[in-house]
Picture 1 (cartoon, rainbow, N blue to C red):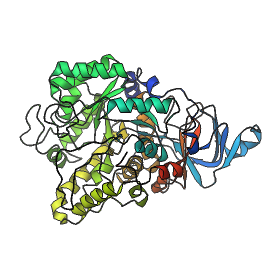
Picture 2: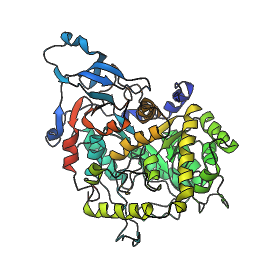
Picture 3: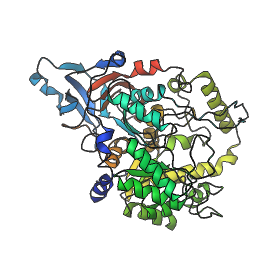
Picture 4: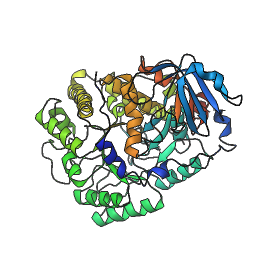
Length: 495
């Protein structure tokens, strides 16, 4: 059994840059307005009685507890037998057979859907690759699945994301707390027509400054950025007390660490340091696959990289759901998730899924090995004291959908070798720690914000029970998860 390291000096250092952004991410609680009220199941003073508690620290679940909520905060957590002291104003909910855990902190979430025009069963589509915004459906899907705080981790329509956050924070729209990442910091040669290509380091500085002034609370570098552009962007973000993460390719992990990056996306999948023919500031043809295949978990290269990351307090975001789609027969077909897709989005996903699942297995031998290497490397990173974050990267592959993908990430962390309660910690407290919000969210404890998820069953024994979400509390307001899902049925991929 792996033991998650107690966060000490490293955690303190990781929270420094987030100090300025943190108050903007968690806005003061407000009452939901008339458009949001239909999705509210319970509010006011609430006691969850006879509930099992997974508190987010990684410790064992506690049976037959009572959690009392008032004014958007957790008032107390303790044995259920103390209900006699509750005042008459408290609504007592019998939670027998249910588990409460901290709201998930989605650290690689998006508000868009990648569309491949006129895709057919053979996988062919027409250019250009498009990225329509899912402004209505995404926030509801996240909250319905128990994601109470999310980082957009790269924005295609940052003005929209900022306005959505403002609406949610003012009680006018359903959705989680948002860490709004500015537009992708991308170099030249992007496959996405909706991305700005940075011209040089000065352009990177201007871009970060502009969006920070407008309210972006984090930034993300992308695959074709140069070292000079990345270094300038990091410097400007840090100057403003903000953090920067990256889905890299042109810049290797060691190069990014040297430049002061705060977080690296996709675990160990997109490090290109060992890719054959890798040229400085150029994305390699392998895009990191060759490095991951060569960097076996017990190799000296892996040990050196993990030590470098831990010594420099660089977090890693695990995004296993998007990579399991590459492994034939690995990803389950979730009927509830399929139900929220449009007919066209579901058809496109099933085309892609069938192409992978029906191909000869030997064609995917390297892919399977890469996936297994990453699982083991993520375990070793945590065992060495690294801060592992969690998110699914829901970008248009219908097997990875907002909210459902966040739940699947927790399940895959268990597959990777973490215990269920350790996996919950990675998906809750670790994200809160990175954001500088561990004093307010991430655990079930008296004094914390009442951002909680109630599920039917016991995820500490059967991690798939994390999918059985019934009520999601955000700032003490309990939202009806099934109603939220019903409101976007057949809509994801449309709006």
